[in-house]
Length: 497
Figure 1 (cartoon, rainbow, N blue to C red):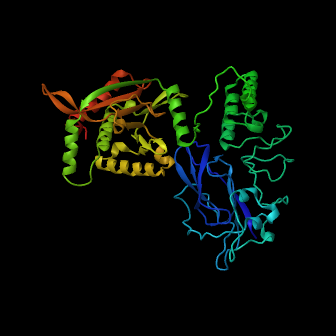
Figure 2 (tube, rainbow, N blue to C red):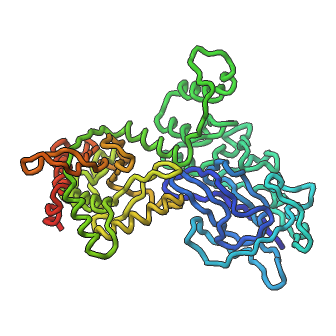
Figure 3 (spheres, helix red, strand yellow):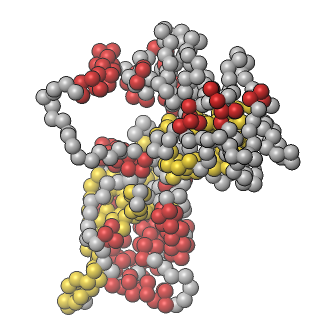
């Protein structure tokens, strides 16, 4: 007896609320195994392959490539318990709770075979719209099909091929029309206090629970009354009802007013690029940094001739090559040991500065998908050789677009080498919620007074942008001067090793 189970977009961690479908890895009718990757999605953090926790036959997919889905929205449905061949069968209990690649039962990859979608949904007349949209076709001669009689139904007689509503995320009202897809605007009962709550995101529900907000008393400002995170935040802040009404009216009237003449300037023409995925996350994080952090920047020019010579000598001695970035990172960790104020974060709610015991060093990397900041864990305990290896590994993952959320979060200090772009200096925006960022410009020959005489030396500009709440200029200047001293005289660093 076949049972159709729905697989929803899982919580990918790190506070992510949505993901964009980049590429489907399976089609309707394909056979999948437990923990087999079925779709590649792009979150605000990274590209992630999502594995399916069920083994069976794909009966429907929800969302085309390029569609952005909230966490908890259906991804696909799978018919489990279908006898594929006499020698193999799948139990409906064979499920995995895993949601990220790299975890699971290690089941072998399935052979891709197609099953007629119409048979799984109870006949050609009742084929799933999602299945039709994904280009499902009749099986070729010799391919298997499922007997419609084997498709189970729910306790109230509804065809399980229909989208399944999860009461923990979103449920239709008792009189809601059957077969409404979970991605459609949620059905709202005539009396919100008696029917289901129009909420899709589980994070919105959690936020409401944390602050004691009754969602049934809120009128959502989203499409068809959908309750958004902003609505809960307004309720938490206790904004007057008149302001809430105006906020809702503006959002609902926007489509109608767009065509009407207005005195406000309207942007017309030009290319519009959605702020989502990595670019959207970067925009949001940088904006938050500017809003919350009172930053300041100091800089100094340093003679890097001796550092470059030391690196050449280290690489000439044999063994793995040491990168310049690794040497700069080693200098940073030594400086942070002397000035721990800069390896910190500000806890606004507690009004406290939290000094962190470990240095998780982020480094800015420009990729085809935009700017990303991979994090080297426990950089303070690594050698220059170990740092070089980790920088190489993470940079390669960044170029391939396969960095995980873990690779991109948890940093405590950032090293930004913008010299690779051929520029001397910059005043970067701090990577929130960190307290500081060291910028390194290009190293180029310049006239320099060396030992009382004018000479051509390899000069670099170093800049430190810091959160003025965690320290004053004296600390920031001391940190930057120590870094410059180590660059000019690498022997200074040896005293701290």
